[in-house]
Length: 287
Image (cartoon, rainbow, N blue to C red; front, side, top):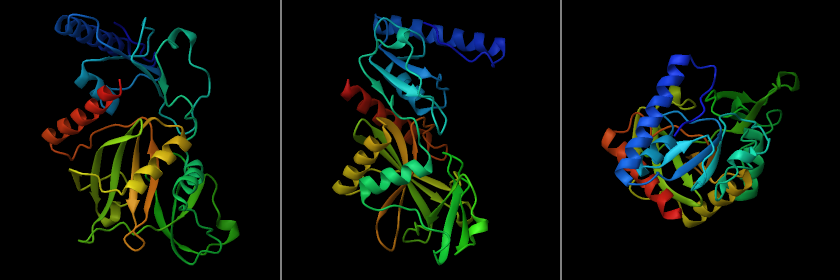
């Protein structure tokens, strides 16, 4: 009934987390009259703010990075762009199956390659020859540091560790910038949020309004493309950030995050609970 927490945490904080984990585990044993099902994670232990933590709590399943005699599922959980390719410790390799185990690179460069393979088009432009606005952003994941510049630019002005992409006009009918946050679980898309942003924060993670969509805004082919993209990126469980260009109507997945936090804070508490319940139902149906 324990989990491994980083030694970088203060001793009191680690002790409190262990105590809280143990009390929750004991309560579930009493409520369910058995040991709760186990989801193994490695190498990181997800915080309480992660979506995965909330899903397992909704199901009454234990989430741990310590060995258990049997586990429903194992999930590689490593919050970095380029992930450690070391093998899962033998002591943990007793889950029925592991998700995201081959996901080692979620950089924008890799995403571009897999996006072109899945969708047939991509976002990259040559900044030396492209005329007009383009977006420059970090190659690393979850930086939210995109900004518009004017092309073409000089060869000497090319920066390292960044990508240059076409500007996607993702405004809605009211002129507001928005993107879709897409929950992807083993081929299913149980939850989609619409996140509205102000003009000056369109490339950040700051939103002015979030909506939990009642039905999928994607076509059958677009969902098939996202499944192909997930396969190319080696993710079984992740969240995608997707933009729809109002001129071409094409969908662009600009970010793949296999360690998501959420639901978004701007969503009403009742809708947050509904989103978690939807994801939990999807998890349960798979197993």
